[in-house]
Length: 386
Image 1 (tube, rainbow, N blue to C red):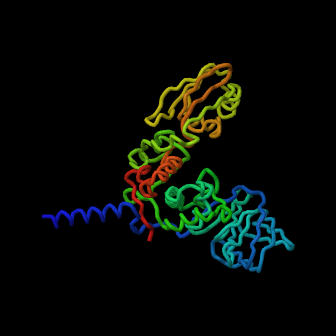
Image 2 (cartoon, rainbow, N blue to C red; image 1 turned 135 degrees about the vertical axis):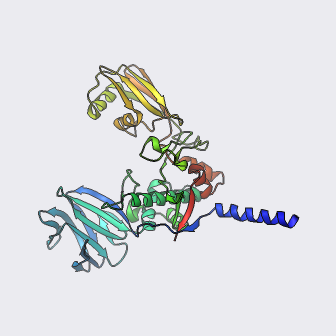
């Protein structure tokens, strides 16, 4: 009986250990990540510090080879793409790919990039610039811009897994598009090689290939700076199933000491009036703003603006109109006095998924990256891509 009991404990111990780390799973993911580092550009500055080839995107036909590409000004022209250096090169084709012999060696402006570079002339006669590289190099160029490299290693590793997951999810969703992600806050902030730091790159290497999955699918692993006490339900903001358990929102007692847990802002009413006039039809002079409803996380759903015209508005739209740096989140209360709107709010960002400041506090308390992810994405599993 005792031996049987010990055997059961041994099995449970193994299962517990497995739950604390990634297990391998075969998932269909793209070979390369495609990141738009410039869109609708009239001109870019480009250089390649070493041997390179310029090929067509469609067929791979070599259009030019060189030992080095000195600073070139690249512009679209009527029939294709124009390189202006010591000698002009005109490529009469809509899209070209620059393939360096050494990596990294491609400069766009003052930023250095790994992988390849695609230049595409758009229907509007402008340039799209797309960096094509492997997922791990991309995450190394992202991580330092999304989280402090001075934070505890476990929270950096949690962020690496979340960022990698988000990138692969976007790649799957946009597999038929010219690019999967942008290089700014609309996706993840990406700065190429100059976005890499030793501690963040170490976290990427230590979690290589690890992503979050739920019921056999890659999770849209959103994250934000600080939730203010509870994370938001993803379906409140985006067209995502309301039954997606890992993104239904969780209580977060960990970000209370964050500098963004609570905030206060004062905005002149005339500023709000002018911004509403730009974003929508003119409302006129504001007399009162009333909160109509809140969701379970405490964030506003709807509000009503009493002015010369009465306007009902989604809180997300109201925040977008005023600006995310004016209203840090949609979890706020409003009072009006002396022609000014006084906001008292909690958290910073959309509030969905991992709360970075909460994760920071968890790491400081001794939680590892898998425990952090399990808290903010309940029901999701960390798997290692084969």
